[in-house]
Image (cartoon, rainbow, N blue to C red; front, side):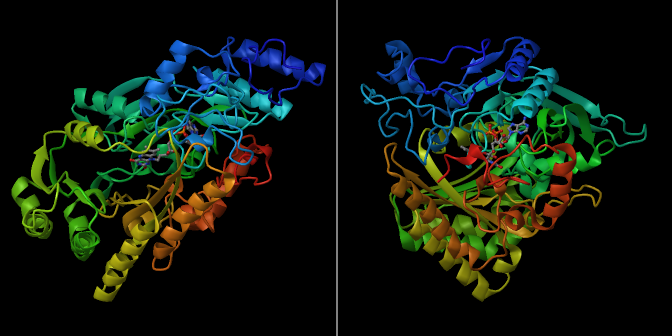
Length: 568
Ligand SMILES: Cc1cc2nc3c(=O)[nH]c(=O)nc-3n(C[C@H](O)[C@H](O)[C@H](O)COP(=O)(O)OP(=O)(O)OC[C@H]3O[C@@H](n4cnc5c(N)ncnc54)[C@H](O)[C@@H]3O)c2cc1C
């Protein structure tokens, strides 16, 4: 029996394990409902209106079909994730998906819409009291809690079957403080320009805000990733990180409700252990962050160089990556950040002027002019330009490069240490490893987004693996699979990216970015947190003694939990 106050389940969706077995549990439901001003809703999979077994709705279905691959639309719908395997139950095959290769063509006339991994209910969070009530409820009923912001998580950490979710999407407050001093810090504490963002703000919104205030924020290269959720708490890399640090380097304060039901401020002067844990220990683990304050830097002009071509050419890719790897340490010291795929390199720089930039990247520009342009390679492009602000770069970049959205996708990655670039034989081994990695999987990206040149103050402790500081590249492999793939095909895709990254595991120390890691990362505690794991575990036990928050490969996770029953 469902609790009397909760919204009726939509037609056709299987009943969640929200059974009222006693008067005490019914009382907990009643308390929760009243505490959150009735802001509890059913978790309905995005494509629900398109299924005949449900209350099929032509107009709503048409909208879902049109927007199926739109990340902003997905992030604004509770029942969607960016990568669709986290909406379904991978293990049983129960799902409610459209064909992502052609979502407008296929309407699921037959078939059943199953809630899969979409949380059964969610609270539209508006304040700390909502979160406190949810922790109390979960503590009393043992119903699993999930924290969901944009649903971008590559490891499914923002969904779980038969759970109650805290949806932070509508916490959209933004403010600018020209001289911010963290709360409870002494009067002589350093004041700095900063911007504060509610937990639901997404990067496209934050960058517009920053542009209006003539400041630069270091953030993700994607429009709809959240600013202060999983991105920030898991590390947060950017094309500006080389010179300006990771997200965790720049956060000055969190406002957070910890699972013991207490609203806390965490900064350099108050709850320092929690501040340390939230600076890289991972989202969904130590509390529900309501807002965070980030360092704001002055506006920048970005110098940029782009070399690209249109079709695959293994020899040319090897030449490009040889130029990049041979010059990687110099370019990192010169302040460059950016991306490369097998047919593309985009590098941007916030500290050099245009003359210095051209001189610094002379070898890349020459390669582009001679080998790509000179040889009339189809689609050849060599662009040397500048952008007057970060926003202008971001808008152009994101209009041309959109990540996979609305599909099933596996990712795996590695941080590539500077020692891997140190001798000619190491560099040769790295280029050949990158080539083999590319050959082994359908897609890969080399990200020049590590904080290699960024010097943090010794007192500024973060909990991401120390390997970020000595790494020059963050390299990712991806593989997709069709909406109706079998469990074996799904397993094969996860294996494919993991095997591709083995080419890097063989030649680099054990380190990976937790937010873009292999779902089955071996030795993940070391790979994500290096020497910090034991300390993070102690902090987890202090603030979450009942283990109310849990997620896949998170600090202190319980692999036996029913919340992981849909993982393969
Ligand atoms: C298309 C795409 C582009 C990306 N680009 C970048 C990039 O440029 N740089 C980069 O570093 N990463 C990037 N990522 C990875 C990104 O950092 C992770 O997906 C991250 O987990 C997203 O966080 P979110 O809050 O937006 O998503 P969600 O899936 O909603 O949440 C992710 C995790 O954070 C937790 N969480 C969310 N909000 C809160 C909160 N308020 N308090 C506590 N826990 C919370 C969730 O429980 C979950 O564990 C990208 C991912 C995608 C899919």
